[in-house]
Amino acid sequence: MKRRNFIKYSGLGLSGLGVAACSNIDIFSFKNRQKTNVDFGTLEKSNLILAYVPNADAAPLIMAQEQGFFERYGLSVTLKRLNRWEEVQEELLGWKIDGAQLPYSLPMMAQLGKEQAPLISLMTLNLNGSAITINKKAWDAGIRPSVDYFNFTDFEDNIRKYWRSKEQPVNFAVDSSLSMDAYLTRYWLSAIGLIPKTEVELIEFPASQMIYKLQAGIIDGYSASSPWNQQSVLENAGFITHISRDIWKGHPNKILATMDGWARKNTATTKALMAALIEACQYCDRLNNGTEVATILGQPNYLNLETSLIESTLMGNYSYSKEVSEKYHKTIPDYTVFHHRDTDYLGQNDHANYPWRSHAVWMLTQMIRWHHLDIFDYPKDADKVLDKIYPLSFYEEVAEELNIPLPTDKMKKEPQTAFIDGRGFDPSDPIAYLNQFPIRASRPKIYGFV
Image (cartoon, rainbow, N blue to C red; front, side, top):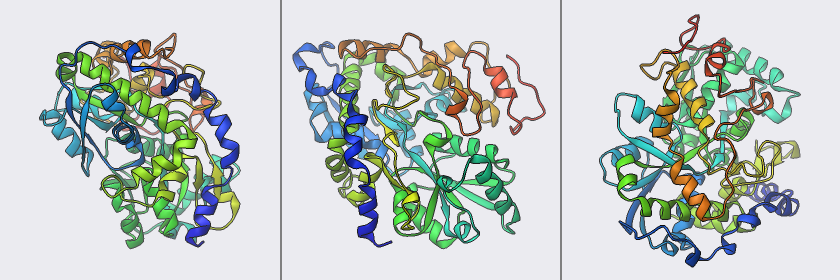
């Protein structure tokens, strides 16, 4: 497919998306609020440095800067682009920056892992937003995107047989072994019936290098946030098998992180920062802003990519393959959710930015499942521990000031239809959830409380 045809397919169904995907956004639109109605008190600190890694999930930070939302709340922000999540975390732990975009799981690993550092998550910046890209050798062997199969069983049978028939070990890449993409990849692999680390090795390097590693045959696939996967499709370096929403509908992806001591010392500043980013998330979710957001993100000082690559994922017009067939070009308005979009799995008050405690419970079960912590059973005091890592109070106070309704319960069950393997998730019974997985690092151990 020529580049102009890729862009043409990226626009499929756009006119039909505008009303449906934005119908609830207007209720909470930034246009409906006045700065004079929001008072978090005197800012303790007004000049901030925030870090991010270049991907489309950084849109709220970038647009808060470009659209003046930070300034509107009295903040002067310098955005610092870094290449790796480990660099971002090091700068946070060293108090060299004030806050940052980070993968959902990193504050948990920082507090419960070897660092034991008080890194916290203040709010979720987006749901979904990632995809799994497979190299062209798999296509030549007959593997196709998930949309080409009747169900997941058909797909997983084909790719399991293909990868097990390879003479060389399967190498799969992620931007960090501790990112949400990495945990969803492990979930996906085990649902296929492949054992992570034993049958598939996960290696790390920045997503911006994905296309070159795929072309060189160094990796069999890569799981990453957009728009790097679309670049690989455009250049015919690979094709998309699944988007992350297919693995877990409505999963948290990136969060706003800071040090606990920083947030406690600068409470008014923290709330102002969160309010600015919530409004930026709302702005990013308005489809009529999609082209503008993509154009700004594509600038050399941010992602340095073509606008069309970024726009396709922001506006929900997604290409699984470079093939001309329309079955590989889909309208997915909830590919990325920054604040709220109408879906069959998000309720009226189910906003992307709310720090659901149940999301944290799920993350903890997966860290235990794969032995990424020195915890071999589920902690009895998990609720207390998770409250420290993912505090609710900051978000609740900001949401109240912005007139954003809150859920009645901080925990929510995920139905069987939410996950690719048909396993529902009840956060009130994490032990039963852990023990149901046939593939896990400690099998045949039976989990209990510790």
